[in-house]
Length: 343
Image (cartoon, rainbow, N blue to C red; front, top):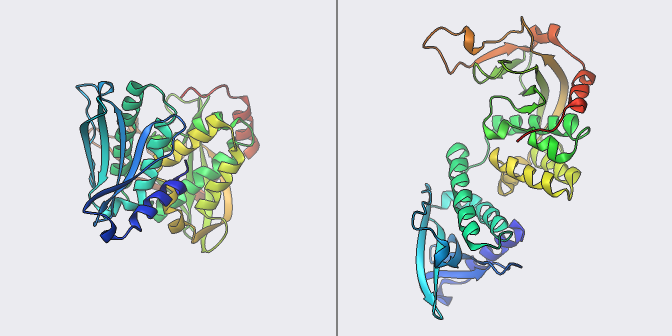
């Protein structure tokens, strides 16, 4: 079931007049080919959304620990029905501030659970997905990506599209995208790492480096900086949601690549429910550059810091990097010659 269909279920329930139901929760069952007992609901009269999954009681381990959320309430409830004992995991909103992402959360968990027949594994998967969402919401919040984060993600997806998907299978290309996992580098493959930087400022353009490890090539055969200079223009077609949709079409029905892409987008804080907020801003490309980080490249690395100094952030003038420019053909040859990405 698509997120749009789940949203339609929520909206249908929310549209029910308060007078039509007593205070409480009005629910709709989510259609599932595997017969999984999944429900979306809305509390009346507050119209706060909820999601629940019902399992045979024996499938819930006694030491089950479910994460707590800001803006969410997670409960486990028991019930007896027709002589059978059930346990329900219920996720309920307590704040409307998280209403936008709730459909995405419910869709993600639904997509995970309907593919698992075994009840014990389904409960474990539910707990794992909740823990993942807890981390995502703590990291990105519920309001969507900032303008700077949108541009950074746009640049990474441009590199994924133009430098990896053109030369390698989709699953390989998406596995190499390590930025969403909070790795030090945005892409890693075959001993090579690539850090993607986007800039929008006028000259001099500055590359913002987030830590002393970001341009540290320790343990790597090669490290490149891929620089994309952009001009933000309102209502231009080249927007972040348009690029996401293009990547989805390029990967198409290749299940491994498609599922990986959706997971990576979610880890990066991109949720479709926020797409309308991003679609009003497009990006015209001013230029691209590729630099190889070698001895003499302007950077700060960990082994050069004095004791007690860390968490360093700094900026590099793009003009100073020009002596380290390489061609796209050099990077293409590295990508083509790499083996599997072990992730």
